[in-house]
Picture 1 (cartoon, rainbow, N blue to C red):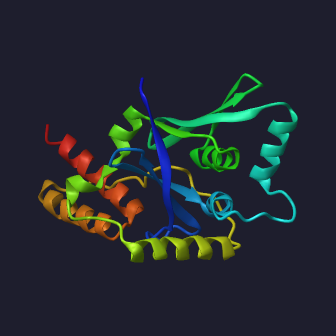
Picture 2: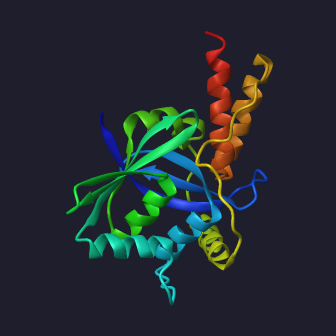
Length: 216
């Protein structure tokens, strides 16, 4: 199966009331598909700290893992989000020098990837199933300088937080909707993408797909 290289588009705070939850947004390189994944605050902080080039006085968990891998003679070659099963994402870390392929949560895999400068991949089948294509909903949607400033503010707020907690890395489970609400859900999806509320967009996408599936 084909895999697609992605980059980190951003981290945003959850707007659905999940305490300490963040959305990690991955975007395919050279394409339009985006993959939002709900992760916990500690993992989001670990990714944000490395992206911002911050160095703690003592190694954090992912820094410690990096040190252990390097001292054992290994290096992270790549990470890949390989599956979406029962609404939970699964990732794999490939470690050169130790001949290891390690099962991991996407957030931990990405946190290590940014520390090693390793590429991040997502299986094409996962992007097809869970990805969001913004241009299919609204061709006029585009990033601007104000959006970039908002992303920077989100990162700084995230790095200043000390909340603890963990979220399972999954799209929020959709609720059953009557067929009469299909158009309403599509309008809500369009608005969520305009607002860059990718976690909410992922929920709406799953609800629409489930609802459309019941009509066939």
